[in-house]
Image 1: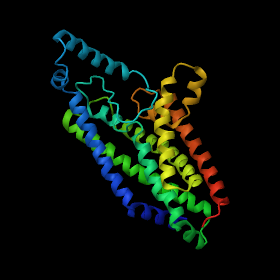
Image 2 (image 1 turned 90 degrees about the vertical axis):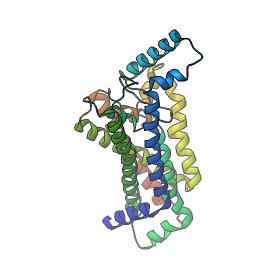
Image 3 (image 1 turned 45 degrees about the horizontal axis):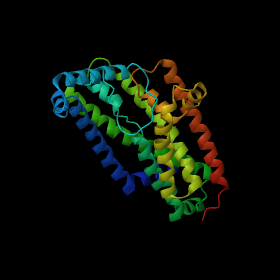
Image 4 (image 1 turned 30 degrees about the vertical axis):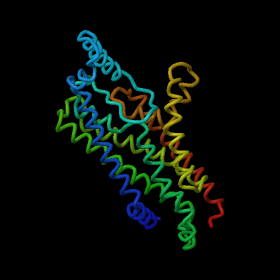
Length: 293
């Protein structure tokens, strides 16, 4: 199986899609730095409020600052797409705060959907799977090897975006003393686990759909569009909160928050691991029963 894993990793990194996604991650990191620079400029914000009186401008600036402080005091429920810069002072962000913001919301899920659609669902139509299985490879070994290769690729893509944004922000604003190396490693490791849980679910979808476009479409809808809509219900119904707190969107928000409690953090990891096990076993069962042509 080790040779199969190496082969799958090689195949992933030889595809054109991984190169395109690497460029996209670099652009997203640069975009985050640009947004943080604009938001941290009081002159820029005041310049966009020229139609208001000076008193109204000052009031709005104070509201922006107080809202920023309030947002960092609790775990946001997730949902949406993009980057939320949760700095204690939005006009003076630090590299450590940008580090947490660089994980994004909904962005990595879109990247995963595109990647898995290309390297998993795409192999059904190309006949690659049939050729591999013809050499006597076990289906469960192929499935696990593919998942491991995807998890590594997602880790590399995430690392590109996070490292560029964090290093760039540190140069621009300084790192700050609130986030240490242990927190950085813990958060990134947790992101890999939660990210793998999302990958395992999208891979299950790809196994069922056997279509590149369908996999990408369903993945984006389920892991980006739906959380954006239903996250607005969080905090309104207790029964809904309990269900929403086991979703990948919420767990991603927890492990990338600076204010998640140790209990919330641990629960997010446990839920992610259980999700990986259930989704992977389900995918293997379905894959073993499929007629591969």
